[in-house]
Length: 222
Image (cartoon, rainbow, N blue to C red; front, side):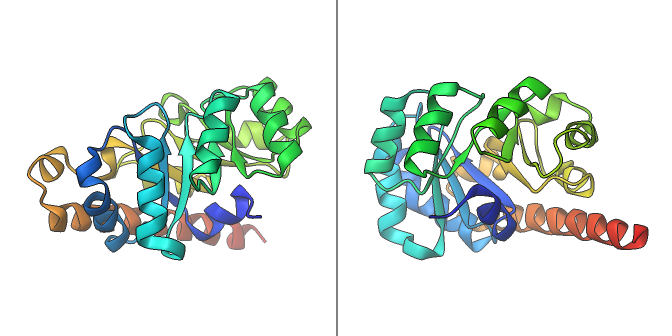
């Protein structure tokens, strides 16, 4: 069983799919994959979510990792796992979902914003969290959280785009997720998947530059 820290160590960028038309699912995902992003979240409050999880797993197999987001009820969590989701994500720290996943050994990226949220997740055994909405907080906010909660890691989701993604990584985020910002709206509307891939590559480059800068800063302090 994977855990979310391993997932994001290997796949620092998450592509969030919400309300992507069913007929565009595979082309959309392939464009992102070709750009260098292999980790996907399918939002369960979007149309055709479970069908899209099945399509992605069937088409790309082990080339990608597929999570199910907005898993805010146990029913949603059950449905997602039944169709092949490899991990779950929530926007908040919900005790019933934390307990459900802990008891069944399901990889979960729970949402957290406050120290109380973080403490609840850690109590349930989850040390890697989704800081949401990350874009509304100072980018160095995780330093404050990591002070008392050493051993925790965070994935920035909410308000992340091509311009600021490097900044999140430079400040120590383990990963970052992008939804509508993963590629230009006009590329999606015109089904210009090559343009979409080119945009994703820019995002990957900015993220990797940011991560490298953070790692260099750590080495300089040693």
